[in-house]
Length: 386
Image (cartoon, rainbow, N blue to C red; front, side, top):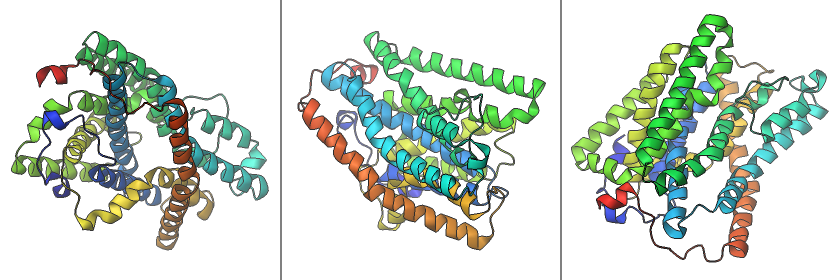
C-alpha cells in the first residue's frame, strides 16, 4: 500500500524503541475490520473478505504480542506471566463482557434469535467467556458468537507461545521454534482437511474454525517480530517498498473475492498462506515506517482503534436486524448494521474499554512500579547481528 511505504526505514539500533501507537498498524487494523464488515454484510459477493481480514489480524497479533514478550525478556530477563495475562484480560474482557451481557439480556427478554427457546444462552456464555468457540463442542451455541472463534484461537496460542519463546531464547533456537511450530500447525491442518474431505465434507465450518487451520498466521507474525531487523532490511529502498506494498495489497484485494473461501481446500493451502505472506509484508512496512500517516488515512486509523469492539458487535447486529439470517443484506439494512456497529464500537472504546485501560494502569502501578527499569538485554539472533 502506498500509504505505508513512505519515510525512512528505522535502523536496527532503533528497533527496540517503542512508539506509543503505530498509526500504520492502525490503518491495517481498520482495513482488516473493514473487510470483515463487507464479508458479513454481503457474503455472496465478498466471499473471502472475512477470512482475509482475520488473517491480517492474526499476523498483526503475532507480531505485536511477540514484541511485548521480547521487550519483557530484554528488560527483565524473563516473561512476567502474571502481568502479561493480566494485561490480556484488561484489554479483552471488558468489551467481551459487555457484548455477552447485552446478548444475554436481549435474548432472555425478547428471544430475537430464539436462543432462549432453544435453551442455549448458558452454553453460549460458557463458550464465549471460555474462549472455546473454535473447538468441537458437545453442545449447541448461538450464531451470535460465531466470530469469537478467532479470539479463541489467539488466546489458546498465547497460553502456549510465551513458554516456548522463553525456552527458544535461552537456547538461541528461535529459528527452530518457528520452523517446528509451523510444521506442526501445517501437519495438523492437512490432517483435518483430508479427514473432512474423506469422511465428512459437510463439516467444513468445523475445520475452518480449528486453531490449527489459521494458526500459521500467528506464527508468521511472531517470526517477523523475532527477525524484524533482518526482515526490515529487505525493504530499504522506496521503490522496493512501493512495489511490495502495492503487490501485497493487490493479493489481499483479489483474495477478498475468493469463492467459498471458508470451505475450499484450495484456500486453506494456497489462499491462506498467500494472504499471510501479503499481510506480513504490509505489517513490516507499517512497523518500519518512521513518519506519520497521511491525513486522508484518519478514517481507517479511527476504525482500527475501535476494531476489536467493531469485530465483536457486527455479526450479532446483522442477525438482529436481518431476522437471524446471514444471507446478503439489503443495502439499507447493511448500511444500518455497519453504522450501528461503529456506534457500539465507539461507545465500547470510551466506556468499558476505557475502564479496562484505567484498571491496567492501576494494576501496573501497584504490582509493577519498576516496569520501566531496564535490565541487561537478553541475547537473540537479531541483537547478535547488530
